[in-house]
Length: 279
Image 1 (cartoon, rainbow, N blue to C red):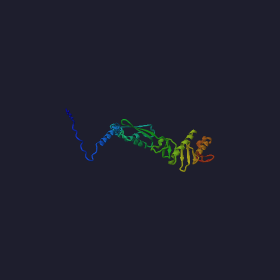
Image 2 (image 1 turned 90 degrees about the horizontal axis):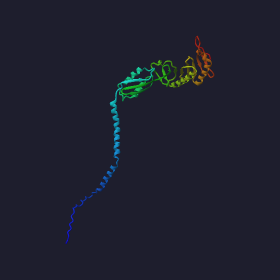
Image 3 (image 1 turned 60 degrees about the vertical axis):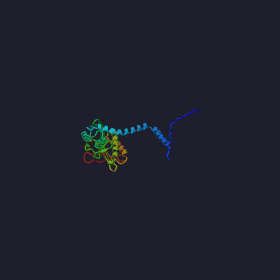
Image 4 (image 1 turned 135 degrees about the vertical axis):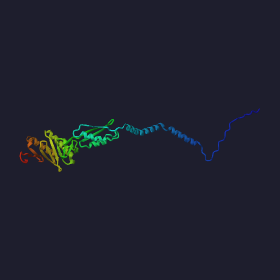
């Protein structure tokens, strides 16, 4: 008996014909795979964090400005601090009132400092804000050292200034000389003043002539010509003669010329008539 075996199967359509010039899809699939692998390897978390930081960095100045604008006030009070001997505190306060009503945060304090320091007696000014609406100015006055050229004053730091009330400085030595040599005159005066003070004498003035000659004035009225050269040697020679011969009769001495090599020339006061000269 012949057995029949029937094999049933599903019909599978044949592959569609390829058009000429068509390529396989496998290379494209490979490219997409490479793309996905690249995307998977990209540090998206770090990139996102960096983006957030950049955004925040841009927002901080804006936010700070908004906060300061909301908090900003106007100056309502001005305080002048520091011991003042020659500068008028009321005048300073009146000048500082120009900043009342100005912005607490936006006002440039360096402008206030520069304006206050333009005053003749002011050596320096420190300006600061006092929350919520105050302005505080610490003022340091110049310390006058001497009168300069009978028109101005010179400070202990060597600054020449011209206050309107120059005579309020009181009794000070009188220095004079070319303006471009004020530092040299001040240094020489301070040096001679220390040496005189050690001997119980005071310096009343020092003059530097345009041609370079120095003349010293003592507090007891004696004038000493020191010339242009060897100032220290001539001054020491004068002091030797003064302590040995002249101190006991200093009130009779008008002028001493120390420009000589081996001694000094003394001009004595005369009770009556013009002064005489004795060498």
